[in-house]
Every structure is written in C-alpha cells, then in structure tokens.
Length: 324
Image (tube, rainbow, N blue to C red):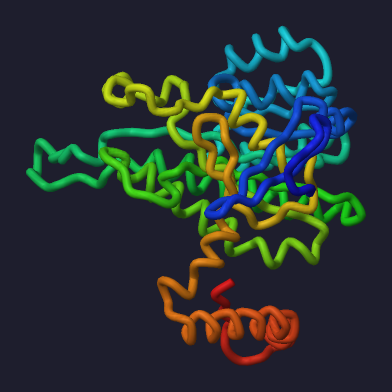
C-alpha cells in the first residue's frame, strides 16, 4: 500500500484526519488474469457488476446463484472462463457442490466472495394460525441466506483453501452499513449483516497463519433493486453508490493480498476503512486503562492460542474460549 499522492496505476490508501480511504485504478485489476474467483449471488446488482469486472480482467469466474435462467444467460453472454452452477446458499450441499464444480473446472480457487443476500419485511407482520389462534414463527429466510449462507461459503473456503496452502487466498464478505449502524424496517437484514461482521472479526487473526485473508465490504445506499422507491425518494442529493463501485471494493482484497481483517465502508463510490479507526478510538469509549488492558489481554490470547488448542485436542479439560 502507498500513501497519497498516488500514481494512477498504483493501489493505495490516504490517511486523512478522521479516516483512511483506499483508491484502486482500473489497471490494478489486471492482476486477476488467470486467477479464479468464486462468487455467490452474481446474476444481478452488485454481484453481476463484480462478475463482469473480474471476467473483463481475465479471471475465471465460478458463479453460484439460485436464479438458473439468469445464470445460464450470463454464462452464455460471457462465453468463456465462466462456470454457472445453480446454488441455494442456504443449503449446505448446494454450497459444497458449487466449490467442487469450480475446482473441477478451474483448479485452484483464489478468491471467494460471499455476496448472496436478500431482504424481507415480514418480521413486522404477526402471522396467526387460523385454527389455534397462536402466533406463528417468523420467516427466517433472511438469516438462512445472509448469515448461514455466508457461514457455509466461508467454511467451504477455509476447507478448500487448505488444500493449496502455498497459494495466498482471500475471503470477502458483502456486509452492509447495517453491520455498523441502525436502520428502519430492516430488522433481520441488519441482524444478519451484523452477524457476518462478527464472523469476519472472529476469523481475521486465525486465517493469517494459514496464508489466507478475510475482509468485509459495507455498502451504503447503492443503486440496485434492493433499494426500494420509498427509500430513494427522500435520498435527495446524497451520494449513491453504483454497483461498479462495490464491485471494485469487493475485488480490492484480491488485488491487494496483504489487506486483512478490514471493513470497507463504501459511500458515493468512496472506499473508507473502519477497523483501524475504531481501534484508534477505543480509549475514547472504553477509557485509557481498560483499553490498554483489553489490548494486552487480546495479545496474550493470541500468543497462547495454539497452545490452548493443542491442549484441548489432547484431552485437556474445558473448551477453549476467545474474544478474538
């Protein structure tokens, strides 16, 4: 990474007083040529833009989506270096089959982008059983796709990346600004996006030793079908992402493999990293002493983690716990 000012063909970040922004030029994505990118949820919106960018830059693309007609049409349009495999990410076997198909076709998968996501407003509604009058359970499809689907894809990535440990590999998760802030009428969606942020943070220390990275992209309002008209109307002249902006952010870790454990907020096409600044501000919201103790405790856990795991595997008492 380079500090600004940057040449047009350099990836870099610039540190301002209160934020760290990342810039990526179109030519930076040339390094994708010959690499293989697997993406879930790639036939429309952000996923489609990511597929098109990766493919245009010479990458092999493994595309998993439950919309078969759109997936077949996309693969026919791109013609080569693409494999579409129908996949419901909420089903474990579908996700495993997607990875197996991609490996059979292209060999090593270098980057996995967990992008499939849905939203629903059903949580606001009380569904009552007409016979018993009892409240029925809410529809959990949003969590099944947005959270469990990501967990499944990440688990598969960790497993298959382990088969080629000499190759640096990346996991990228599509989160949301809802991973960090509250919102209106998106209850389970925000729960799912907060969950995948926790998954990224839980894995970011562990994956480094396995020659992998994991990062999250948090798009602000983006011009897709998911942005309903009642949300567009009051938006006014506030900045709006294009799908191509998010595609660049999702592929940033693939062209900048030293980046790990970051959350990239994307607003109006600008990419801002959050995790470093959150840590820098930790003494403000915890106090200096507690912040120092927290950092010390985390370092000690990391240093002793492998020893704890080994002891547990050898029959040691007590299940290992960590706040990493």
